[in-house]
Each structure stands twice: as structure tokens, then as C-alpha cells.
Image (cartoon, rainbow, N blue to C red; front, side):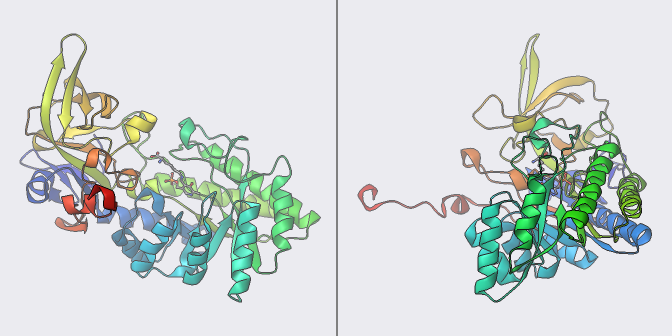
Length: 441
Ligand code: LLP
């Protein structure tokens, strides 16, 4: 089991997160329930920003990748910690603005930004937009011109680095809907194009090579390719790169097949990137760029768990045992999408030895609705509280109302004290936008 200070087993043999007893939380708030430890989130935001401070004279900014978990509270925490954020939709931007997040510290991504999203971003006076298409460059330029503004932009580059992770989350292989390739010259062409736009100020480049990556070398290689490209552009176009955004992607612990990094481990990844930037700049005689990174999963992933109540248990002799919970693919679609692996614990009997192999099923009407197959658990009984660990990233943010189930509420625990950060849905919420055309009334 994860032995970080965020999770503990207390004297009653219950799992604790951030100093709060999960069995009590389940009683008070009901299940399914997303629970986040604020201390862990802040610690991760700080370690990245402190590393930039210590190893790079503070000449950079951490941008929390809000696609991992977006709600007002996470933006309020990021704001207090003095970091920036990345957003990928009008909805994430709107949520951040509601939380009074400083617009100049927001970077907007997306491979197909909509006109209304670009208009809204400009109205908000967003700091940076990452351009990922000619049509986008045109649209941002036109909209900025209408408003008498000059918009800071980066160009998304595909450095052609294959990161070893699940294929669905690889984004910088030659066949990618993201970015412009350095290798085939399209990145340079795009640079020349953007430099020709009067209402765009090109600050530099962005790349993101994938997610849940532990291989330091993949990150380092991508940065090296970027620096070589920056040097090339200085010679061919006379363009001096001021900002280099190195994306996100640091891996986290889900099961004991994954490395369990502590803060120094993450510091090590960022230090390696910073060293690569310094070495490259000295080799190519480039000005040290302002650097940004976009960690999402590594900031919130291990800070969150999901609590469920065990319901139906079904043993199919010689085949498999299903332990069904009151959640499923509507609160965590990652098994259905990626066959992701998780560690589960019986929160009310956390000391018991996990001596059974079970599949944890959800309550949706489809066979693929599992939280995980072949997971180790102690003998589970109906009514037990089941905690699935490391669900802070890409669970709530990817949840849906499939089968008209409720997206579970989320609570934030701070030194033992809990509060809602996302309130429970009601049946009323589910039908809020339903309407009947006249002939069906
Ligand atoms: N920046 C960009 C441009 C990205 O596309 C992503 C993730 C990040 C930053 C943050 O990466 P992180 O530090 O969280 O690894 N739904 C998938 C993950 C998709 C990630 C997409 N982009 C999952 O559940 O594993």
C-alpha cells in the first residue's frame, strides 16, 4: 500500500487520508465520494515551483494542468501557491475565472480551439495561447486585432519523441493530432507564419510528450530536440525563443508496478530538465528561456482517493469473483478506457491481509464497467467501505452521468477537517436541461 504521509492506518484499523478517518467520511458524506488531501496537493505544487526557484533562479512558472482535476477549489489553491494553470476549454477557463485566478498566469491549450473559446480567452486577457493550427493562428490574430490587442502565443511542437506509456496518452509520435513536427520542417514553417502575424507576439514553443511517464530520458530528449530547434530558428529566422514550455507527464504510483516517487524524486525529474536547458543553451549560445512545466497528474493524482460501499458480491465458480460497488465507469472510466490498474483497500479493515483476487465492478449496465480486474483484497462483505487509491487525477474530470448516475461529490481534507469542494448532484441536476417539444407534452 502507498505509505505516503497522506495515507495512514489508524488505531481502529481504518484508512486515514490527510488526518481524516475515511470510514467516518463515508458515513458523513456518503459514497461514492472523491476525497482530496490539501496538504499533498500544496506540497506537490510547491516542490515544482521551489525547484525552478532553486535550480533556475526562479526564471519559470509551474502551470497546473487543470484537465487532471478542475473545480474552483483547485484553482483557489493554485492561486494561493502562486503558480499558474493550463486550461484546454472555455469551461476550464470559466471555472478558473470564477475562482478569481490571475488571467496572466493562464495558458490555453487544445488542438482545435473554438472561436468562442478564443474570444473568451481574449476577453479574459489570458496570458498565453498555444497555437496548434494555421486556422487558430488566423483566428487569434483577427480577434486580437478587433480588440486592439497583441496576444502572446507559443507554438506547439512535436519533437518526435516516443515516451513509453500507454499508447492512448502518447502525443508526440510522428502520427499525432498535436503539434507541428520539427523533423519534417512544418514547425519551422509555422514559426515563420506566426511571426508574420501583426497581432500575435510569438514567445516560444511548447511540447508535451505524453502522460504517466517515468523515463527521465524521454523528457530530456524532447527538451534537447527543442533546444536544437531553437538554435536552428535563431540562424534561419533570427528568432530568439523567450519561453519554453516543456509540458507535463510525470508518472505517479497506482500499484506496486509503478515507481513510488517522493518529493525529491519529482525534484530530480525537473532538475534533469533544467540541466538539459542550461547545457543546450550553453552549447548553442542561446539566451536561457523562461521555462514552464505543466504537471497535472503528479500534483493531484496521489492526493485523491475514491470511497465506495461494497454492494453485491458474486462468485462465478472457477472463474472470477465480482465485488460490486456503488460507483463505476461513470466516476472512474480509466479501466474501461485504458485498462488502468489501481490499488484498492478495505477502508474499514485496512490492516487485513489482501488474500483474494477479485474484480471490482461498477453498477453500470455494461460488462466492461470495472474499476479493476484481478485486484488484491481481503475477503470483502456487503457494507464494507472500499477505498481506491490514486484517483485524484483524471477521475472526477473524466466522470459522466452515464446511466443517469450522479457524478460523486468531492471533499477536501485539510489536517483532518473536511469540506465539500464539489457538492452532491440531485435528480433535479440530471434533468435540468431536459425539455419536451410541444408535441410530446
Ligand atoms: N500539458 C498538456 C499539453 C497535456 O496534454 C497534458 C495531458 C498535460 C500537460 C498534463 O499531463 P500530466 O502531468 O497530467 O500527465 N486521461 C488520461 C490522461 C490524458 C493526459 C492528456 N494530456 C488518463 O486518464 O491517463
